[in-house]
Image (cartoon, rainbow, N blue to C red; front, side):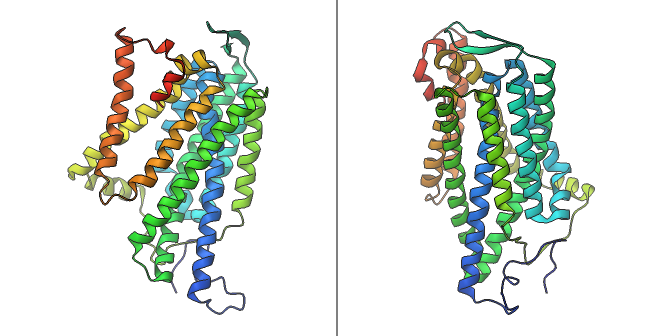
Amino acid sequence: MAQTEPGVQLLNTDLGEDGAPTNAEVRSKQLRNNFWLMAFTFSINHATVTTPFVFASSVLLEEVGFVGNAILNFGTMLTSLFVAPYVCTSLGSKGGMLVGMTLYAVYVACSAVAASNCGHFGEDTNGHRICKESTTAQWGTFVVGSIIGGLGAGILWLSEGAFFAATSEVLAEVENKPAPTLTAELAGRFAIVYLVFEVLAKLGATGLSKAGMSFPAIFFIYAGLAVAAAVVFCFAKPVVSTKPGPTPSLCGKVTAAVSLWPDVKIWLLAFTNLTFGFAAAFMNGYVNATFTSKQLGTGTVGTLASVTALVAAGGSFAFAMLPSKLLAVFLGSVCFFGIALICLIDRAGAIELEHWGWGLVVLY
């Protein structure tokens, strides 16, 4: 019998009501239903978190939003390296996801509290209401919340990856299909669900704001949705690899990472990752706070952010049909370069982004 992680069971062998193994067709349906449950709950939970993240520099004092978002991103990196592997190993991929989802909900609640603790509201040059002065409570709750959010992100993404990989592996065995084929199929479906909820969450925040609801109230509602998604995910069945490998030590992980350095592809891909990280931070921070919220209002930030997710959803569907992903990587790199180029031209005075209005959608 295959060895499992502590506290979990093999979904493909332990679901028979009478203790006897179920047939392949039933097991396949169970695994796919379990996958959809994970995809929907994960996507809802994650979408509620990225919404206050996107709005942070516009709803809070700009400096508070910038610092908090930086802490969350840096914390995610450290957690992924040093904390998440041990959480996932100890609790299993499902347990790790539940921990991550719970921490995510706490982050959204902290964002709501921070948004309700602005020291002084004022208006920008276009008459839009913005936070002009922070308070100790705003700084404290958002910084602490961002630390918690970083922990949650690192744990959740690694655990979700383990859950997804195990599902693909077991389903490939049950359906007698090549593992790469099943992985590509599930990845495409997961991406669509994930991005659809990203769009809905951003548009929902914009709609509620336009209807007169305050952002603290919106964030509290989203915190409730994050909790609800975590509760529903409790009904998912644990899935683990039938061929679990040894648990590496911290030194072993570092050694394994260093052993990849001679591969030139790692360094080439690193620039793509760095570019994505800087572009996302630049858009969610500087562009949202400096141009979008001031020209179109804070509520419109969600609308334009949803455009990014919508284009990504369409792009992921289209590029999934290509035999090679090099074109997708190239086009993505060109787009990131375009964001920087437009902003540099603006700084040089050749164009004026502060007057673009809805034309800012080009950046998104």
